Length: 202
Image (cartoon, rainbow, N blue to C red; front, side, top):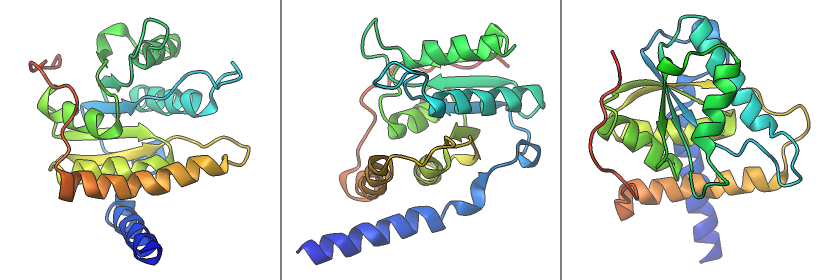
């Protein structure tokens, strides 16, 4: 049984990466022009209280999209589990500091998981063509979920930290890709929160 699980996990990872790698872009100049970018949330601070380079680099990549005329609006989607932890609001603060206007930003407080953020971008905010902003290791899973839901997505990947990524980041994502395959093709997992549609400004 452990061998079967290992093989299935490896195959799931191969499928997720190979089916999406042509949609991963690392140069803002090669990103197609689209109205909306979906920025996936992460904490703005590390556990030790220092700035999170994953967060900072995502915000820089998102701002570059706007200032290069590649998008005109953002959905900032993340966790808002308490008054002390609010990923979308922290993303908004960072982008406003980078001269992205408030009017170009919509906050999605129910992006509790990558699947939720992707599905809500279509079902709640009405977007079927998006540019996703996240790090490379995460982009394949986000694109895989988008593809399943017939969302035409590309990913502008933000730089990863200069230091070597913690091993647990890779391990967590390795199994998260397998979980994504199960969620989509076996379990029919739905977002935890949907609700009323919220059309974006044109």
